[in-house]
Image: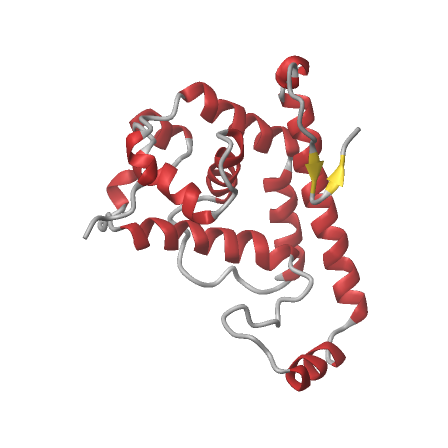
Length: 196
């Protein structure tokens, strides 16, 4: 039986490619915005939980890299980049200390990246945090859940999500050079919305 490691044969990621993803995240200001929203949500409460192995900035950079490489934006793709395609300088640039990673199994890489994205990003912008993602709800359960939602909370989280995504899209447009899509005959869309 073989282990699925498709990115293992693609070689190390160039620091230039990492820098593009870094510039998108840093130019966007989303890390600071997420911290501000998180602080407002936790007013008077501590952060709680254990420290993240992967900082929010690094997790967002890793999540953007698959898109730059023409791959699906899945946590699995990002974790495989982290596991197989980053050299020591890249780890340092992301402010991740490799020595703190005592286990090097595939689930460890995925889980640590997923935890940061879930608890430090998604939980701050998710309009429906009470919805279980690990099982399907019956119609009755969903109706009860939907009736219990605070419309004001949902609207504010939808606004946060729109702001977050717009900040990243605008930063991408600023960072990528104008001739990036020269010769491109395909369509360009964000969340299914065509861009002219």
